[in-house]
Image 1 (cartoon, rainbow, N blue to C red):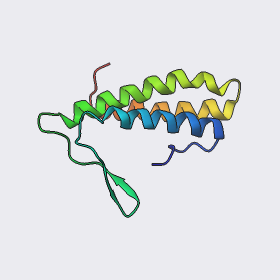
Image 2 (cartoon, rainbow, N blue to C red; image 1 turned 45 degrees about the vertical axis):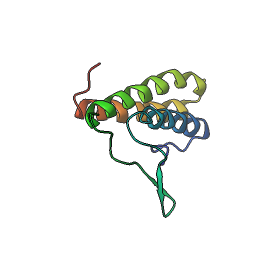
Image 3 (cartoon, rainbow, N blue to C red; image 1 turned 120 degrees about the vertical axis):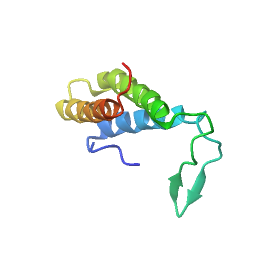
Image 4 (cartoon, one colour; image 1 turned 135 degrees about the vertical axis):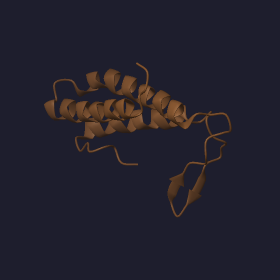
Length: 102
């Protein structure tokens, strides 16, 4: 994955960490190991009984919480703050599209 649209090194680190947390939230939703194909990770289908939308809502909530708490790592770097906030807005938009609970 790409770290959203972040280019600031600190923001890239924060966004990458939080996307990783999002993906780790799916580990109980699928059967591992993950399948690798031509160097690109693919995720198997969700386990039987798992609701894909609910699981994405959960993962986006984890990612949003991570981004919110990671914002402090930007310090006073306005570019970093702007880029992390942009990723937060993306995640909020995804949660809104999916009608995720608060």
